Image (tube, rainbow, N blue to C red; front, side):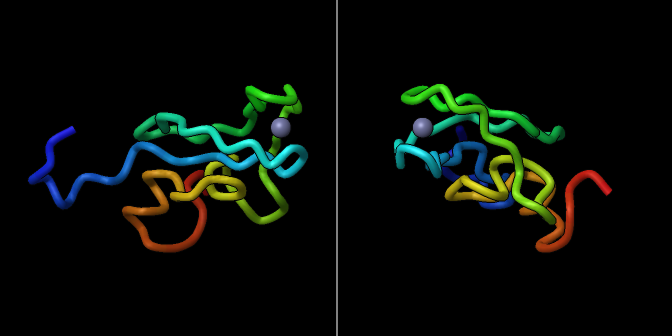
Length: 77
Ligand SMILES: [Zn+2]
């Protein structure tokens, strides 16, 4: 990570499991969506909520990089 790079999207998002409320920081892929994420605590496989493109947009503290770049919408069309 470059501390002076203000244009770079945040690549770490804290996913909060809706089942057990476990929060886990994860690295996001820069140019891809992640549709599935297995909770490291209860092993529930999370999927995006309706209207969201990836698990980071639904459960993360930071939306995925394509959303950060666009500021809106969906990262996968
Ligand atoms: Zn969980």
